[in-house]
Image: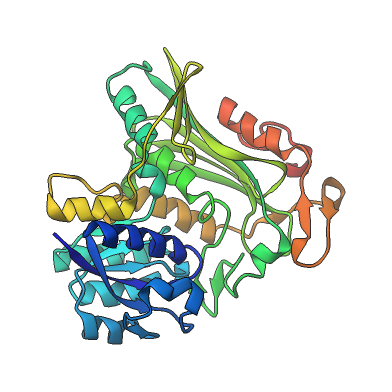
Length: 371
């Protein structure tokens, strides 16, 4: 069945959706009936869809096109009004992650989807990885033994241009509206959501304890070097330690500490390593999964918005706790000027990794910059 779709947000990650829509149109799975953005389309980026309706107002576009599915790939603080417009129009919703910048907004969107009787998929791409699915199977079958803890670490680097890309970048709020553009809640949101999903702890009340250590190496409102530790209702200790100030960047890894076996999920690479034995897996995108679910409801959504409660609780906590502490200048290294300028925290790569290995916080690891 060919589904009609509109796309709100055509730049940034929206360009990925444009490429996927091109593929899906060639397969006959979808028909793009409209584009929405605050800026007019560029000839190069939108050339394949130059004949499709364009509007800066999603409400007007929905009234004109009446699509089956609305894709919202816009800044976090716009998810509620745009998602609300799509759900009120009776559209199924493909909503980019994170679903909303506050608990209240997440609850409203989840309630709207439920009352409208439509599906709302959140774009946590990692949950469509075959490596993740296989690890879930192994945990459920008891292959790893008793899960003693789950630790995730990630070490990336961002330059000054990353924080100048938009008015909301690196902000907790913008003109009184929550934004939540911190390391844990945006670039490493997949780490948090995937760790929780591996523990089957996705509901708001599935978290019984939650502590954070939030730091920053730049003049921003949000965290860029952070450690999160929580305990689930199952009794599992889950840590996530990440940084955007690494001198030697590496892809994130989730470690499942089993009493019998140890597993490493490299979720950006669809790679599962079980006691040192690697296996490569395929991936199904959130949009393809949503379309498959609409064709056959027996196919579960990878990330139903209703199953984002625990993640949203983490986001809400991170965004409302006291502001992240600035790391003392003596521990930092600065390189470059202008948009290419970067700030590094030497040794942070080892710190985030040890956090995941030992399920410990930065202060417990005696990191001097966290004292």
